[in-house]
Length: 395
Length: 72
Image 1 (cartoon, one colour):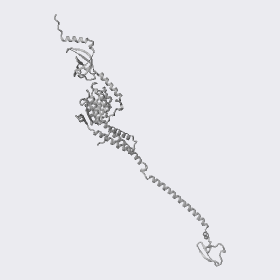
Image 2: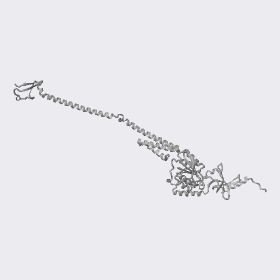
Image 3: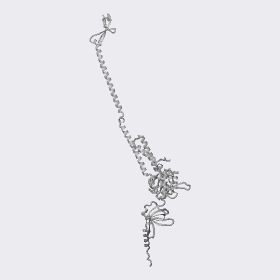
Image 4: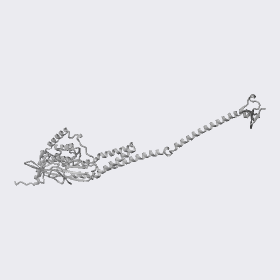
C-alpha cells in the first residue's frame, strides 16, 4: 500500500501538539548567552540563547519586557524562564520567554552588600562627613559621559535655571572595565586643580553590571576624599549605588542633580529684590516715625512759643514789684500820718502858739527870762511877739 | 581684582539686615548704618550673579597628562 503523504502544515501541527502536551516544556528555566539580539520596533525581543555547543531561538513579547530591569545585549549571560513551543509557519521551536535575569547577579549583589557594610563601618556614609553644597556655585564640574542624554539634561536644566552658569565637563567612561579608575582619577584631578565648586557624578540607567564602576571601592574612596562636594546621580531613581551612599548629596536623576546644584536665578533675584524693598521700607518707616516724634516735639509749647516762660516770669516779677511798691507807698503814708499827728501835738505845746494869743516872750542875751530876779534896772531885754520883736529897757 | 564674596553668607547677612531694620529697635543712626550695609550687600549679591558668564567647557587630557579646557 502506497503511503498517503501528509502536508507540511499537518506535520508541523502534529509536532506542535506533541510539544504542547509535554508538561516539562511548559515551564523551562534555562541559562545561556545572548546572541543575535534584536529589539523589534513592535516592542518584541528576538534573540538566540546559546552555550558552547548548542543554541535555541527565543522570543520575548512586549507584554513581558516591561518588567525587565536591564537592557539585554549580545554576549550577556542570562537566565530565562519560559515555555517551549513550535512556531508552525517556520517549523521551528523556540522559547517564549516570560522573564529574564542577568546571570551572575547574585555574585554582584553579594559583593555590593559586602562593600557597603565595610564602608559603612569605616564611616564612609557618616552624615557628619558630608560636605555642604555651596548655595550659588560658580562652576559646576560634571563627571559623566561626553555623549548621551545625561550631559544634555544637565546642561539644559542648569542653563534654564541660571543662564550664566559655568559647566565644566570632565568626560569619563561610565561603564566597562577600568571605568572606576578613571572616575576616581577625574575626582582627584578636579580637586587638585580646584576646577569646580561642586561636582555632579552622573550616569543614566543601566543594568547592575553597567552601574558597577560606581559600586567599586576605588570610586567610593575618591568620593570620600574629595574636598569638593559631590552630588551623585547614578542610574534610575530606584538604583542605589555605593557612590550614592558616599556622595554628599544623592539626586534621583541627572536633571535633579542639576536642580540641586544650580539655584533658580529668578528666584534668587526676586529674593534680593524683596530684601531690598523690605529694608528700604523699614528705614522709611523708621524715618517717618522719627519725623513724627520730631513734629510732636516741635509742636510743644517750648518750641512754638519759646518766650512764654520768660513772659510768665516777667509778669510774676512785675507783680512782685507792684506789691513791693504798694508796701513802700503805704509805709510812707503811715509815717506821714504819724508825723502829722506828732507835729500837731507839738504844735499845741509850742510857745509860739501862746504868742498868737497876745503873749510875748522876754529874752535877755537870747535866753528866756523866767524870773524877775534875772533882770535889773537898765538891762536891755528883747520882747518877742508873734510877728516880731522889740528891744526894751528896764526902768 | 574683584572682592570675592561668599554668596550664601551675603544673602544671610542681607536677611539679618532686613530683620534688624524691621525690628525697629535700632536708633536712627544705627538704622541708617544697617541700611547702607543692606545696600552694599544687595549690590554685591546682584553683581555676583551678573558677573558670572555662561560657559560650557570640556576638559581634555593632553599628551603630557595635563588638562586643556575647550568649548563643549
